[in-house]
Image 1: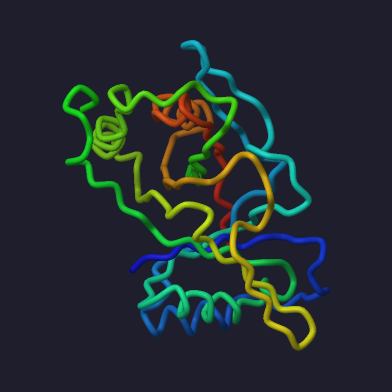
Image 2: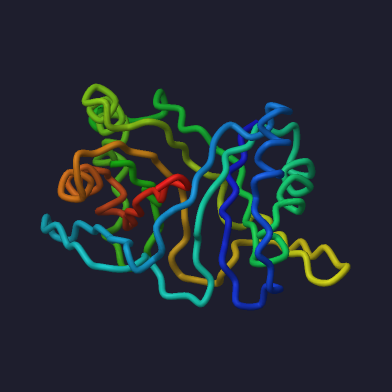
Length: 116
Length: 111
């Protein structure tokens, strides 16, 4: 089952300059980490909304928060417990926080014919 | 240019109309154009776990990393020529209307 990890910068984190390189190498070798990357800082975010048929584009993230997502990793794990264990070994679990979310694939067969 | 699209539930959005949720059409169009690389819906935020290590403690809490009225409901990874194209792609996603979409450029480690 796929789990998405959000790698979060959190001001309550402990100072650390540990690179995630060893974590990446170990989990890639085990076939647990499918892919992942760093994202540009929130200052470079663009948020897009459509309201009353108008496209509204704003600079910045979808919500203002002291914590912000700095990257992601996609994992293949047997269980949420395993995904939490894998997340806890990422250096950013100490320097920030990691949110783990299970994938929930959409069954397109469930969609009304009119929406297709 | 590669962008991470956060697909977000937003209480300020327009009311959800299932018959007008053209997500299947969006996926089909963006895959045919070679834009959509991968993506998925995510289990509701209530099923999220947030993991922190502090001192010798491992802290695992239920729910997302921040309390917010807006909640990440899914993601897509898209490859676009530039930000203008990424905005066009995001604006066609049904959740741009029924929620909001955040675009974040990838930041290559080697860049």
